[in-house]
Image 1 (cartoon, helix red, strand yellow):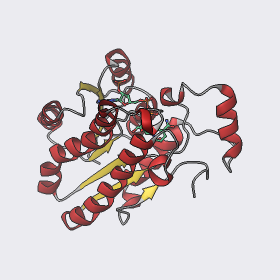
Image 2 (cartoon, protein in one colour):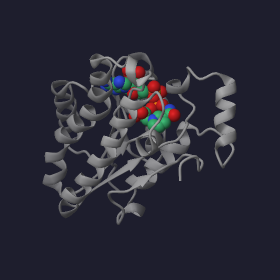
Image 3 (spheres, protein in one colour):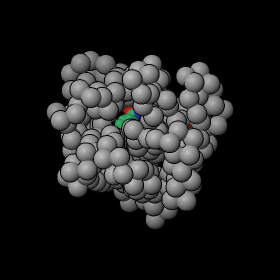
Length: 240
Ligand code: NAP
């Protein structure tokens, strides 16, 4: 069987890195996009036989070059996972224009730039699996996370609209919406807060990056061939 090529944005750490390992274990050629964590991305790429590519997803020029480079190198792209994201905890009244723009630039514009760059290839082939990454806060809203919640809600809207638009071209677009996952993004939360969140979660635990990677693997697989426009939420039941 032909090896599938997957591009994962923000794959140097956390959920993206777990996804890179999962897709490599499943036989894919993995492109590990990173922004600042070059060493981690290159070590991961070496570990899984993948390829590390630097690009700031908020910059459309860098994203365009990255996708062109991937297509030049592999002549195909089968799966796109728009995972890169940044969060920020602040009272709504303390948010600056710059805070708001930064959260949207990475979490929303980044998804737009990446899908737009890859889409002509997917449409040409009449095939492709696109995954976006939202958050439970994009579904229910998080206190002191207004910008992040709004951005992640936008990702869900984009996913659903694109699923309708691209279905006739043989392309599926689905969203993974994680709950609380043990990554650097939650490193600011102390042990007590994490324990309280675990207790609040029906399954009684915080999620792992691998839990999210498995949901991504399913949505990108042939088993999900009839699934599009959906939000799959690995969150232990915290948001139902
Ligand atoms: P993380 O550990 O903080 O890692 C973030 C990743 O995004 C890193 O690889 C980082 O790359 C990359 N990134 C950040 N800004 C970027 C940019 N401008 N261009 C390209 N890459 C960029 O976060 P995570 O927890 O794995 O989160 C992954 C995704 O899941 C995000 O979209 C996040 O919003 C979402 N999510 C996470 C949780 C959670 O509890 N952890 C819950 C719900 C949703 P560099 O290090 O190379 O800069």
